[in-house]
Amino acid sequence: MIKNKLKIGLMVLALVAVVCAPAKHASAAYSADVTVDLSSPDINLTILSGSTEPTSLVVNTGTVVVTVPASGTFTISSADRMLQATGESGFGVITTTCSSSLVSTMVITATSGSSEAITVTPASLQCTTGTTGGGGGGGGGGTTTPPAATTTTTTTTNTNTTTTTATTYDLGTTTLKNGSKGPAVMDLQKLLNKVLNLGLAVDGKLGPKTIAVIKTWQKAHGLKADGLIGAKTKAMLKASAQ
Image (tube, rainbow, N blue to C red; front, side, top):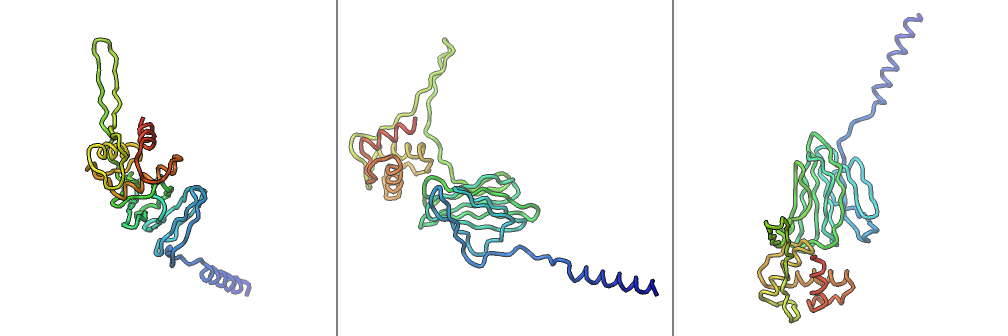
């Protein structure tokens, strides 16, 4: 009789264990866009609908640290700043694009074998049309890097000393503005590529997108944000390149 009760008790415990065992669910996805509020800089980022729910999501004052589970895809965008990524382990792929409306969108895709912990940081400037970035195996969600201005190095063998001549930029004496053309504009484009890492085409034509960047830079440096490249703006740009 005692043995029969013991058997019945063990059967009941086994049934309870099966019924109470936690079910395994695949990672859920966001059903709607989610706004992330940063305070430094004071901007909003948007986690796009359809993104895989991350293993962890930490919102700091100026960064978002997201761990994307294996095989997951996480998409985040900014209408205010260009987005940059750090911390990728080399197992996933990160792609950053800039739309015609200057919205920077970053897609983080983790492989089936490993999750990805990525730090997303807004850059100091808004993205420009045509900016793309991506990576896998150690690549990153950055932007295309334009070639730096050429620096000429002269070596004097007799004295065993090396003299480096800094690149000079001839921005002319007239105020440059939207629609300006010529060699002075080409030197301005080279200077902006060096100072702001923009990747502008050096074609000697000054257009509205470059003027918008100039206005942002002027405002950040306490100048009148009118998009006119006069003597003060030229002097401060040249000083920034040194």
